[in-house]
Image (cartoon, rainbow, N blue to C red; front, side):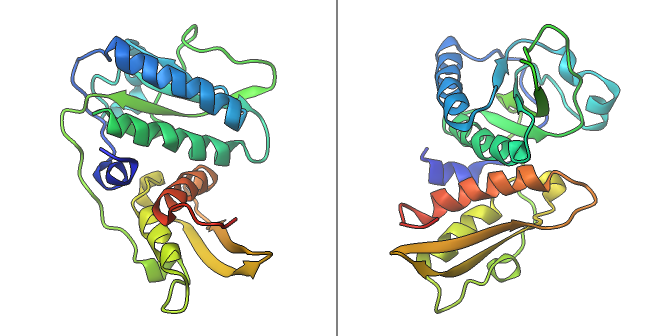
Length: 226
């Protein structure tokens, strides 16, 4: 499965098989985590075979089952931490999908289990991502149209529309899709695209923005834009 195919195949999954991740997959994930932590200045950590984080009251409300493996999405406190968590976390979500795994971004329905992660001075946890072999592949949800979230038209580049289409497949908190993309212009031989988060009482729009920006980059292809 390619990353492009993973974008369309991925759905949030909360019920998992009681099956540990293979050593090979754990190594692939951990190697990628090292790379992304360095690139994104984050402190993402993979926790395996640990059932307590998704056994609390909130987790039951979220209908999690056998969520024994997860990513702790952490980093140093900063204004753009949530966006980087979304951007680089989605790298791991789509990689997991290509490896035959399923995932679910989790903002509230988890418990922090002492001893399962390490936080350096000034760091905080932004969210968790459950990961494992899903009982199902999940189900799709109704999504907005390209026109509702962008200014794509007959006069904007075709790659821009493809990027927006990929962004619409991205996971967002309770499927709120509070984001927009605007093709601005071309300056100094580079196309300019403006990505914005919308207002939401639910929150998590900054994480969502990072997630959809990564999807947009994948969908649009290798185009000279910023």
